[in-house]
Picture: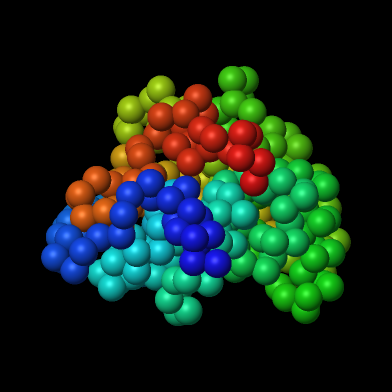
Length: 279
């Protein structure tokens, strides 16, 4: 049994556990990066007149072992975002109970039951099949789950999210779900754009939100959009959930951050291997 646990850890870290001295270095490094992100968030909120409490940071923890997550939690992070249900199922039970876990990757219908058991919120729903499977799994387990509907603001060239013309009908479908709460919308801009050029996509999602509020009656208070790279732009355009990338350490004491900045074809760093891993 012990050997199996070590092999499981190896898949997440590929290194030996950090020593006490090394862990102190990990915590200090993580603390600096978290502090820098929070300072940037505070300045952006001050410029826009928004309460800093209105923007929530989700630490992207894909490939981060429990040791790295515990170090980040000790620095004050409470919400972590996973992309693969099977990986999350391995490590969430070995992390502090007080943490909140969100599904920020693309959820496959085959993994819906596992996701309902593990996560409080799913950030990116754009499939009627997944929507209905989530609702059914929540009803069967007596749970209620928050979701954001993913919108393909980028248009051609992006394979993620619903085309904007399809969103009102999808929201109507959501109104039939009894165990799901649609809290808002999400989008991911093309990776090739620099931080400032993503503003168009964030601004467009906010404008769509106002339009769909009137058309559908959904309040849609949440906008999940933006990573560490474009944090300020996302805040200025109304983001309420920001994916904090390149902050966590892998629990090695090396000071190397995990969950790299955007580098995949659709701007989602955590989706490079999702199709290969299958959830």
